[in-house]
Image (cartoon, rainbow, N blue to C red; front, side, top):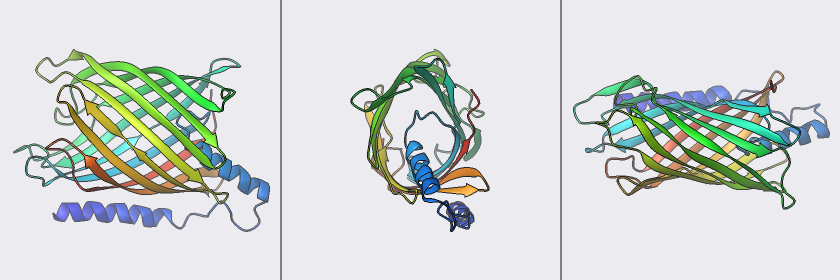
Length: 280
């Protein structure tokens, strides 16, 4: 319990650390600049925007395990790198590198800390929306068995299809990202993987570069026939560290559905997204 309190305190202190940053609508900034920052804030709601960024996301979940006394703090480092393939097409690389600290998840196993399995998605996407205003991308998703502890990963190689489709209507961004991963190699003593991931999302961005979003990161395990469904809400603000745009987010979620030994109740999230100059 003491460690849980320390972890929650660390999350709160991180948010307090973010708050003194100079906001983008500082005195003396032109209306055009403010409009550009609002557009950038909305573009960051697009998973396949032609932007190079590095989101760093912290998620804290609790009430995990057979005794409901386990917890997990997972920090996802998620570089997004766009590549220009031609005048008409982009390739967007989205990688999730999880760093996990967990305790009492598995009976008698104590705590674990280290790298989890890396998830890599590649989206081939037209550079312009369709005539109906739809932005879309499709490509492969890969699961790499990079976990540094056997209890932090599946010990399986996986692959499958991934897609995303969205539209931007005024200040609204509405869409869905989905993929399915099958395991094709790895430890034969571990359960095979057949997981469908579905992430519907909706976001509204104000001219002041504030964004409110709601989304779910639902997973269906076809082997166990169980859903994991967290519903997340977040508030995001685009600020600047010098000339570097940084999107800061704080959010809370609720596990509407999870397996018997999965997390329950509320979850907490902090995220900082660093927007970098495009390289490719």
